[in-house]
Image 1: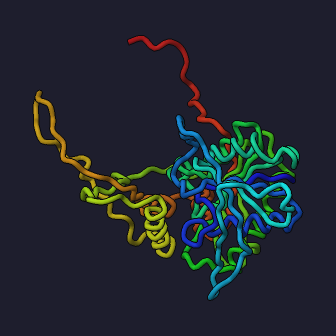
Image 2: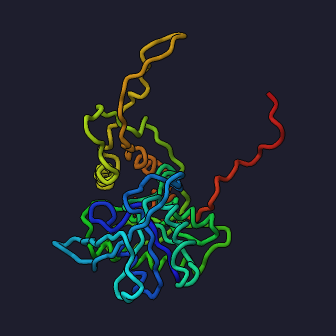
Length: 342
């Protein structure tokens, strides 16, 4: 197959994107032609967005061979503002990075590169650094957003996420997840359900994952219950943290929940509910604040703990791989018709 790979975590990085090179290498070893277009930086939680009014400027990433250092998988490579010349030969691998979103990566990969390789048969978005199970994670997921974009372009797609329980990046466990993923990708492609536009797959990073169950699951419907997912900050004198630093803090909180299903959690704040100065009919006045994204992972893990077996969050918590068939639409609720009169 000719497979287009994108993600929402950006180019290979031990800190923010530790899995994509492993998957690409495993797909290539299985005989697939793999073309890669990734965001040039962290784009998690961005859904299926495009950045309107902005020219997209690609750069070119040349991955170094995967290595293991002190028992951990090490990701590295170099980035250039210009692609390798046509006369350079085909030995050195080169990926495309774009300063936009996963959905834009899919559009650019499908229609603006790789024509000499033939039509793209399948789009893989991921592997995400962390699970994309349950509704609150999935609806914001750039990984699923990339797969959705492929689906609305009429191309089969799979959103792939690796659910970590610690951030050790054990090379054997990651290799096991990639080997299982490649086999599962082939199975889903060969047995594609005609009513399914895309699949969301969550592979737990556990020992011998290939020996564990793979289950079709429903997506758990859940909500944020504990208040705002934004934390109020003191107004800084300097620059705010970049997306990589913010995402690193989020991963740390997610790791804590992965190790203890209901312990800890991000504290957040409900100060957004404060009544502004000024009451009655007069114009209100506001206190000046900054906010940072601080999702309440405890809400998600608690909803999984309280749910019945069979959903995607439950499967991952059991150490099983979840496969959730999806359609690329916001399906309407039946039973409503006719004119509304006020």
